[in-house]
Image (cartoon, rainbow, N blue to C red; front, side, top):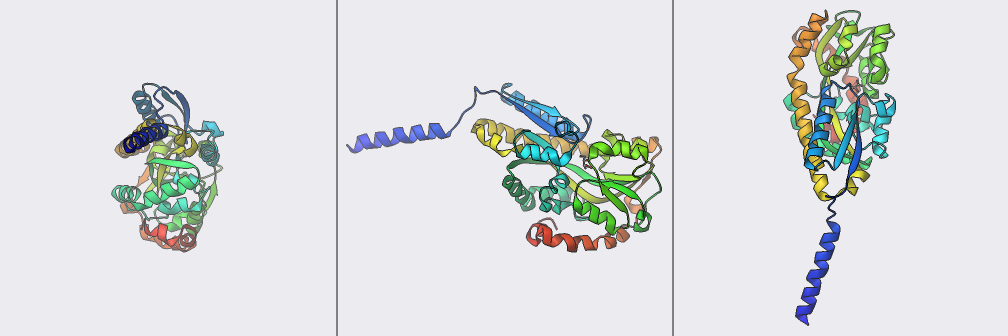
Length: 329
Ligand code: EAX
């Protein structure tokens, strides 16, 4: 009797384990992935790499089609994240600054002059701060599969060389969707406005704005340097790009595919950061050749900018929460 019940127990456990381990070796999926930047940007190159790795490792059963330049949301970046959260899009690369439209806490790592350099960024994103951000993403129905980087945002404009905070006065800058960036540029005496990235090139070309702020790869891959005269390498704001996946879609997959997706995403993010950093020098040379005046950090009065933005910290510490901010300090 004892023996029979032991056998029964084993059989039941076996069935339960089999049922909970959903294998989808035979299932086929077609997914969509959106990126904000152009097809030559490191974001889109890494998205393509991610799609390739996943296809290879699932024997072609998971196909991911990549749509650059926020095409799936008509160029609207914040909408691009909404589509990810509601499952219309399966994956995206979006900057934490665009996520801040959904929840202000995503501004945290982009507070002015908070992140010091690449090594600092890597350590903070791989540490408890990055984990905390992944937790907030899950609250929104998104799995944070990995962090690439947009990198350090530099300022460009068509009017004059910007060396100290006084030079910012009256300059009309397009800034990314983050309200914190608006506060930052106002604190420095500039005249900022929010605009989707898809409209930036034309607005610079037509002179409806004087300048904008973005990392070198974005300035390069969208050819913004062709319609700007000056760039100051101040490294004021760092932003990450989140390789996000709709959580409900992730949960529907079996463990084997979930693992492949997680591993491929991590590899794609490492690749993206590597090429993003490698390209910097070549990009600056291209800007110079096209006539841009490049002002390096050592020639800038960084202290003047830092002093001007202290109020942004007092404004945002209560919004972000001291505990979260401390993880990035
Ligand atoms: O989506 O909007 C922006 O400026 C972002 O930084 C990004 O580079 C383009």
